[in-house]
Length: 178
Image (tube, rainbow, N blue to C red):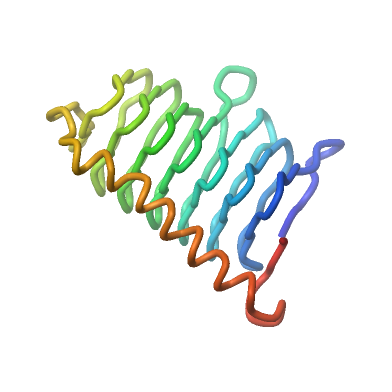
């Protein structure tokens, strides 16, 4: 469901999927091929949210902002796993955020990174491109292998396929915006 926050209404570019149990609120821009899955909340009420092309936000995740200081910006081809919290952070292109991870205010994640499942990335953390982040607090563990980097785009492409399957269903089966 798309909801305004005062005068701000989410903006959709191209083909977008928002499952009907999800909420996309306020100053939010969704890129072409973006998909918002079951029970996700994307709340651009007190600052803005930008979600890139072909980025998927999976079931139960929350994307929010901090008033005046920290918007949330997700690049292209980002995969946000189930039950993730993204709050006032910047995520580069082709990043995989593992299930249950928490990424807090002022965090900046470079392109081609993996944040491991259950990791908590502390406020203000800066991660250069091409690294694996694990733990609580989340720390850079090592550079990614080329095979891991190439899989990041595959993960996003899988969700384009799933999105198209859902968009082909009747609106009774899912909320669709195409």
